[in-house]
Image 1 (tube, rainbow, N blue to C red):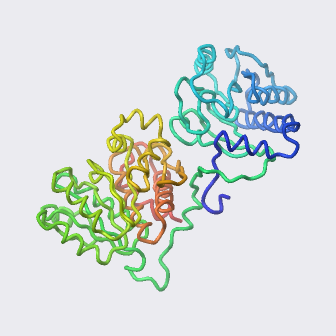
Image 2 (cartoon, rainbow, N blue to C red):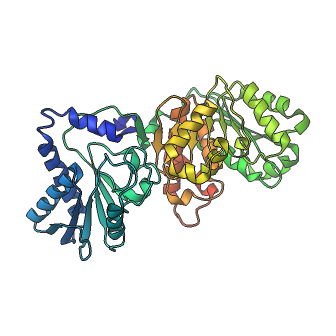
Image 3 (cartoon, rainbow, N blue to C red):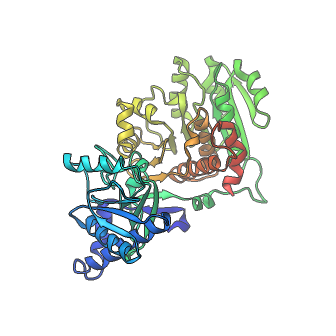
Length: 455
């Protein structure tokens, strides 16, 4: 399934359906449990080969059953493994308290035990999902285990890749327990998705390889559209035009060699920009544009009149009113920007990322690319894609402008909005990971790495 560029991510209900489809179920539950528990034991020993003492904390459900099998297999392998709530003194703790069926907030006694696990000072291996994490949404309404390793079964779970759940998962290992492959609603983008991005061919011209128009810039923020334009070129677009306010033109000319530059006058901005759109295949709207009344009006006019795919970013998102247009549209907010669009608090978006992205996509009839740890690409009325390739070094100013340029280039090459957004987020993350340094990474560092990320 990863050959298509997507890996399936199971919800709790999808995992339950896969188990129930196994021949002989429910009589074959012990067989599945044996494979799952053994997988936990082997992965725990592989990752922590010098650990001798394992405290295995087992709940009362099937997750606890997996833990008990893991404890037995560890003992058979010569390790000391005790099923206990006493976690102090162990080399590794195995968390088999709750499974994929958990949702809500842990009861006080369970919450206290989770706190003890988190404070014991040794690595934790979680069985299927860290206890306290919602496997379907990644939401963590109460306390949750902080795992160094999560061993999950059949397919990875949505909640292990969507924040805040992903922050609790540590490394994720998937163990095959013999279930048939099933279709899942949520998919994870992999590097193989970048094979779907068209490359320049022998018959291409600079225009047929993808032409991007970048609209943005204002005094003090001219760097934003420059980063976007250069990122589009580094993402293999053949031709990029920058439309910036006329008083920014000289600065932009000095910062960017390859893009064509066009200055516009605010009293005739829409007409001048539409002229530049004649030869474009996609538009990047908003980087550094400012939040003036003129900018706000220009965004609304262009969204109405530009008959091209558009990626809406940064200042173009400020005060954006719901709209409808037949062409592909991608909004690229971070949590704070999406919160403003939805009339919510940023903390709510951070706690309910899937729900927030879905609400935004429906309200604006657009694909929402919610940036952050575990980027979510959510189409209206469709299923989300998760891209979690980005390292923490991306949390710096300007990297979002680079991402906008990559999205625009992929739209200009003819990819549909969901594929373009997911592929762009993946390329963006891989470029950051390829940078020779992570501490002190700046947005322009990504430009040099984008071609290598595309392969």
